[in-house]
Length: 125
Length: 406
Ligand code: SF4
Image (tube, rainbow over all chains, first blue to last red; front, side, top):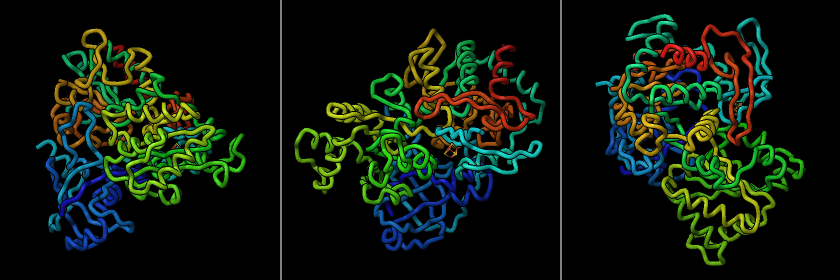
């Protein structure tokens, strides 16, 4: 399924980040993508299933959640090291990354959600 | 009364009860601020040098030595440090002929530049509380990012001239992509746009102001909003990250709208700065160099996109990171480049950046363990004293020592 990912800030996730960015709470609240109900149904994605999100820049496994509000074609992710796997490293003349409009595809996966440590290992590999 | 450094509202009405070195009770903190206070006891960073645990003094000396030997250092972060520490940071950048940049470079820099240069009018949050009768939250979600913004300053309070508060005297609009918690509060005045739709919306708003028919689906709603906006005695626009990213490179369109609104009434702009003292750094650097960010001291003062953290991460030979976690907040491809550079990090907490740093210097948590001053999102200076004793030095103390040793 093709979507545009828009990142956002969530107060519960911000609180968890303040307290411990290596903690399970922060991962649970960060490694997540909110999907439109009908989009998810069409792609056979259930609330709570692991999904692989891929952009031209990278890929990451997160958990899918179905939004209460409708937003076909859009998927929302809290801004975090998980969403940053997808943000293009290439920037335009402004040198401001495009955090809030990322073309991506989403599919169901059996792969596990990476921990912060996994993401760090990836960075230095 | 204590000050919360959880966001750039710098709430200065926090009540704290302390038992020895422990905070036992707090009052008036929002959830985010409470998280910051709780972080006092969680996951503090430990001094490290070249992968092994060390003393703070040793870490400082090693940092000074690395900075002395660097040819093209990048000094980055700064938005979670006091003005006093930032001043030392700029001095250090001068002394080491470094590139200096802050987090505004990847978020609100463009609009903050206009505000600090006085290219667009601004006011204080106290003015908003007292006189701001028409508000536009644009690409932001204050309920989540600045949880007490609407209750302390902008929407709910009864102001000097607005005794009937939000019930009658104030109108607030929200322009955003997502039905956020703030969208639920301002449901009747929520203008939902698609990603990147901000520029088109501005053109439509300008069209209505010029007496033309706007090219939008709901023409009636647009015209009625513009009629309301025109009636403002004092309007205030609060641009958030949504606008910053959507309108990057085209922020002059925002200025065009603000200028146009100001032809008939008064409109001010206060960017929704995230970190507690980003504005302070931008103002200090501007006062010293004429630029708010992205400055190189390699040969006098130079400024430009090549000195942005995004570019400098790829070209520097050393990074000093102060109170920021770029490895977490940069796009992974850029974080990867930075991860390949030797890093020195000053931070109260263990972060993704400290994990990859050659030298880690733990510091006191400002507002709680270290005093100083900072500029609120509206430029008002707020001073604070430490409320508990700390075993860690402040950013300012560490930077002073590094300066002495260089
Ligand atoms: S609104 Fe910001 S400054 Fe005020 S208590 Fe919350 S986090 Fe702290």
